[in-house]
Length: 131
Image (cartoon, rainbow, N blue to C red; front, side):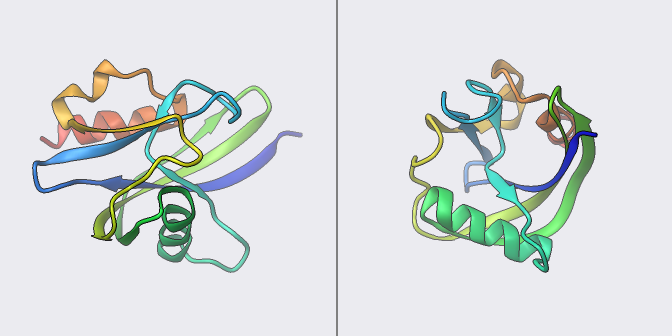
């Protein structure tokens, strides 16, 4: 049976109405695909706390997570992911690359120019439709 993983992802918009996108590095699973940054929810953590912790660890900045924007389950070859995307705002610091290969800010209408990890596509589509 495949392992199930519960993951939170941040949809962070800046003042220019651009969304932060992160390129998965070569040493990550599903390499060279774009995603909304985030990570696994630890035992006993709520979604907001998990997302704020992951963004602090991965991007060295602080966010304030708010409501769930999109939630879906995607089955990869070796595991099943429950991806919960939350809206978030940048509170302090500037996102820095550490685990990812690259970070970019993109207008919602340009999100389809990137090759997204399959689990992130429903949230990408919903973001585009909400413009």
